[in-house]
Amino acid sequence: MALENYSIIRWITKHGIKTENGSPYSFKSHLFMYEPLQVLAKTELDVVVYKAAQIGFSTAAILATFWVAHNRKRDLIYTLPTMSDVKDFAGGKVNRIIAQNPILGEWVKEHDTVEQKTVGDNIIFYRGTFTSKAAMMVSSSLNAYDEVDASDQKVIEQYETRLQASEKKTRWYFSHPSVPGNGVSKHWEKSDQRHWFIKCPHCDEEQYMSYPGSFDMEAQEYMCKYCNGHLDKETRRQGRWVQKYKNKKMAGFWIPLWICPWVTAREIIEYHNEKSPEYFMNKVAGLPYVGSGNKPMYEMITKNVTDVINDQQGRIVIGCDTGLTQYYVVGNKKGLFYYGKSEGYDDVIGFMHRWPKAVIVFDAGGDLVKPREIREQFPGRVFLCHYSVDRKTMQLVRWGTGKEEGNVTADRNRMIQLSLDEFMDGRMPLQGTEDDWYDFWLHWNNIYRIQAENNLGIMERKWERSGDDHWVHAYNYFRIGMNRFGMGEGAIIGGDTSFASTGAEISPDNTVEIPTVIRKQINKVQMSNERAF
Image (tube, rainbow, N blue to C red; front, side, top):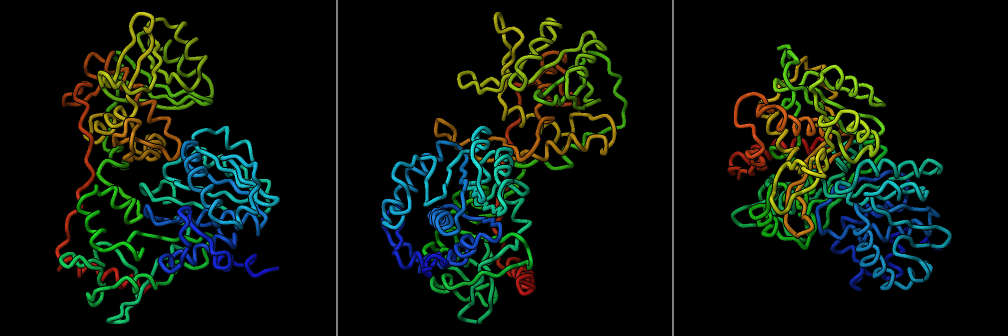
């Protein structure tokens, strides 16, 4: 068998593989991709990649998938966040790479669609993650998850089931990170965490580059952390991957934008000065970012826990997130005094009988049948909440009238923000102990905030989830009910609590320029850690 069938590097070189633009795929500028490509091609380890944006990784991943399908005889599922992304990726990138490379034209069947490519006897399926139905239709022995952090994490978990029938199971996770604990960050913690080490030509010290320690801000040049000597393009190009941890079952590669030799220090500094801290950390540094308000903290919820007994008087409001399991919270103007879950609806129906004036706000989209039956059973006391953005009036909550009586529409992201603002201010008493509310907190721990472009091309902040978040929404429905039926006291302790003053979004922390003297002290700590590598 030819050497190219054993080595992806040899295959790329022999066939003069080109990118989608017709340029030769060259390791001269992408030497940092040499080892990741070899690891991907072996398919012996799961792989996770922390990556900046626009580093050419997608092209490398496409080449790796074709080579593995053909030479390792593996069926692959390659996921992207949405089917629109799949069409752009497969139609605009994959097909162009095939067209530029005759060897791929020989491998791929002409009749293939955008959603799949047949490579010899094996198939590469391209799928989105915002429909669980797509995850149930095909099987594979290797799943490549691209743009993990922008994908639906629950559906990615469902794709894992498609590997169960295969003796060989391999997973690749690629993405610029979002926040710690979500997406690629979860897998990075289990990997060997390889860093790109370079050797300073002035003092011969090996080091990995970081911001701001590897930057001379005044000269706008890359610099050595040890001797402050300037580092040229060739020095940054000729690095090597060093594992932080040995004997891990997952290979991890951190690819920040500054290890790309074509990117100047001036560009990195401009990104830092002109972009948001979140953008810089995620898409330039290729690292997770926790700014103020981007992820709920444990203390944000538990600071509201109180041992003061709620008298359960006045109007009782129940919020319930529906589905196969019903998640609910129960409270009044003095806060929450109970939360739980049940397979059916006996619990919440029991609450409605126990408190004859109680009202309940259900999720309208989970279970389409039973909440509507309960609404008929308790006229005027049951409401169905629909999440929707009111672009015309920008109302946070709109209660239905006339034919829409019994329905309420709310802005999902702004409601979550409002709820967190009130928790952060300590205005939502939770009767009991921290242990009592720990499971409730776990659902808040599974949400995080990102900045994304909406359908109108406007950047906005939105809350995503990395796991179960049912009690988050149950609380939202409770809070919506309290605003109407809590006699203006729905939130509870102090301050203006009406929806008209929903609390401005918390801005991410500003990155503070570190003085040179302090930065050198930080560098000494970093250097001692690097030597421990």
